[in-house]
Length: 222
Image (cartoon, rainbow, N blue to C red; front, side):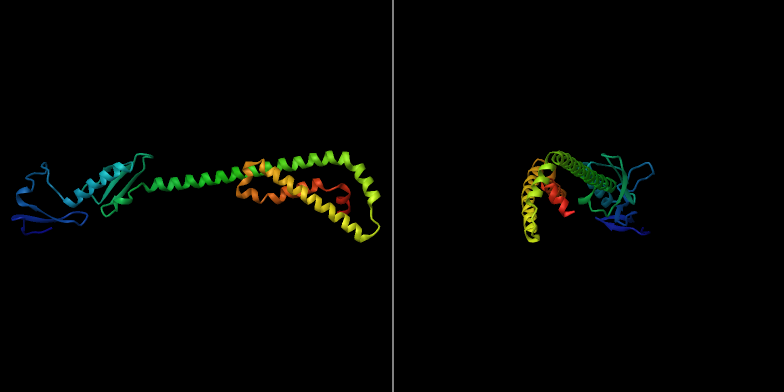
């Protein structure tokens, strides 16, 4: 860098600037006499390279190359990614950016798979519930149709207001029984205790309400 000698620690020295813009001095008597001799080069680069090697060993990284060069080449031991860092890099957050990106993608995939599994589980539970309701309705229809029709013929009110009151009581009773049965069913399904299952409580209630409502009441409502 300098064409003239400078004084460094009482000795004639030459001023240099490395590729990373660090300025330093080398005494004349310390300069190599040939290209085969080693020479102490930029002490700042040497110090940073040594610190980087120590930090990398504790982070699952390995320093491959880069001493006295613009950038240091590292390799992660976990996945074999190669990357480079400049000599201005903060070593307190040294890590492999490719590993971080892949781990984020893997976590996103895990979340998607978990949501898909939860959706499939909710669908399966809903199908089981409706299948159970269909079977119970089929059994109830064959066993109680005649009795319900008989009760309806004897209790069929002639007054419109009394008819409304009669079916209102039937609906209240059906609501109570459906609420009770829905709560019991949901308690038997541990996977229904998470947030998505809360949205299915109304569906479970409606199915059981349909089961508990007499055929004649459903016929009148239709």
